Each structure stands twice: as C-alpha cells, then as structure tokens.
Length: 280
Image (cartoon, rainbow, N blue to C red):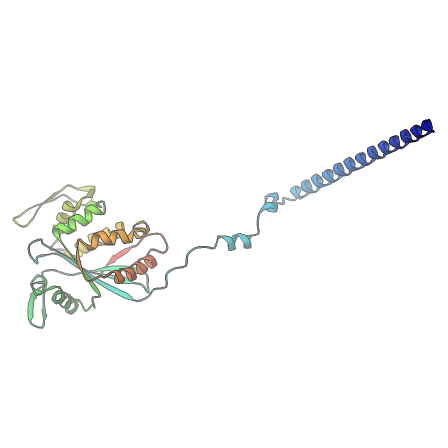
C-alpha cells in the first residue's frame, strides 16, 4: 500500500513539471513573437518616414490649449493729458514745460512741446508762462490750455533739486551728446563732453537747460527719458516708485488717479516691447 502510493505521487509530480515547462515555453515564445512583430511594425513606419516622436506627444490642439494662458490686454480707453514742468528752486522760472498725452485708444504716448517764453492771455493776466505761474499752478494750467487747445487732466511739477533727485533715484539717463556743450553764463554753466554717457541728475538738468531756446529738442530729451524708464520691469515696482516720486513733486495725481494710470500703462506696455514716445 505504501509503495503503491509513493509510486503514484512521483508520477503526478513529473507530469506537472512537464506541463509547467510547456507553459513557460509557450509564454516565452509568445513574448518573442509579440516583440518581433512590434519591431517589424516600427521599422515599417520608420521606412515610410513616420515621426515616431509624435507617438508620445500631445496633439497640436491640446498643446495650443494648454499654452494659451497669456493674460489678456487691459480694457482701457480714452485720452489722458498730463502737464509736465520743472521750475527753479527759488522762483517760478520755467526750465521746461510739455504736455504728455496717453492715447489709450490707439495705445500711443506723445509729447507736445510748449515754449516757456511764449506770451499768453487768460482772464486777469497776460504774460509768459512764468508770469502765469506767479498766480498759482491752476492759473498756469488754464494758460497752457488756452495756448495749446489741449484739456489738461493732471499736472506734475518739480523743482531743480527734486528733478535731480528723481533722476538719481531712477539710476541716471543714457544720453548721446551729439556735440560738446560749453555754456558759461550767469544763469547756467554747462560743460558736457560729446558722446554716449549716463547722466546723473545734475548733468541731466544742465543738459536739458542748454536747450531752453529749443522747446522741441527738450521734448525729444523728455521722450527719450520716458522710453528708457517706462518699462514692464518698472511697472512691476510702480507702487514703490509712486511713493518715492510723489514726495518729490507737486501734483494733483491722487492714489486713485495713479491706479487708473497703472491700467493705462499696462495697456501701453502689453506687447512687452516697450513704449515709443513721439514728439508733436
């Protein structure tokens, strides 16, 4: 009995072993066959110039949808006119005066030069802009509007000292002086070499003042200053710049007005290529 049982147990084990080897062989053969077939298909696709890298890439439509996350342009419109002027520290002598126009409909920025020595009449006063300023900044604004035909929204006024401080705070201005400047008068001493240079506040003021008889040239200099300093990077720190500069100027621009200006600047700088300022 015991011998017979042992014989039967040995017979079943050998049979199972043969069956297991058969299954492993069949599985291995199937894997080899599938691998061979896959390689053959890939080689065939490659033969017909099929781009295999596209198999693991998303479709163009999906890629476009995923990458189209750019912030839309701010929706602003209208025209804003700002009076920009600089006066002497101790009196109302005007160094330069211009109108800066932001056209948010056309996304443009332009400057209109004003001749400080021109004479203009407003109710109660006839004289130069410096004379008009003797009666206060609102009187000057009215005189500029009568002279230019442009409605002024806000004004920005600095003195010599504050202008220098603002330029120094902004890190100076890059200027290409076309020819050497040598002016020595009781009103102004300016000796500036020819060539490319970065001007600090004191030199920059002298440079602008050297063209007091050429308002359009002064407007071109101001336009270049704006193009250099009005950038996307500067806009990112606009609040800090506003806090610093508002304490160095006289202006009727409030915090609420500045928020409106920021939206306008975002629209003007939306294409990231900077701002081009034209001179009228």
